[in-house]
Length: 95
Image 1 (cartoon, helix red, strand yellow):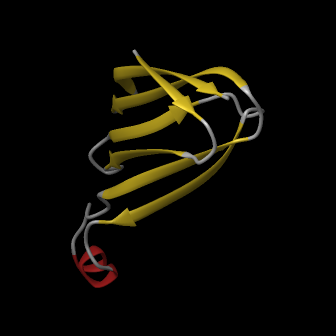
Image 2 (cartoon, one colour):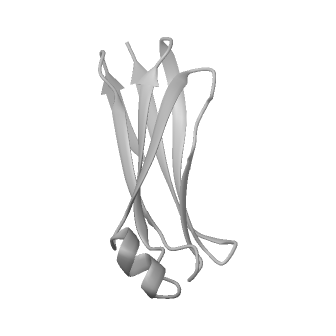
């Protein structure tokens, strides 16, 4: 568990997703407390992905901007083929 005190700004979480292999990454958070921006960037170029089967590895980024004050829990969840393999808990104090 990690406690994060945030006075303005935002939180950023990064992970790896490889759908064809089964590697998953997501975050769980209070949707009333944060606005989220999600982005993913493929490791390989579009041309390389089109030429290689299963070349869908990407890095994902979640940027959470607080909408209200309080104490909230955020979980980083990693998985493999539908099974959770790791869960990291963060307690965020928005002041």
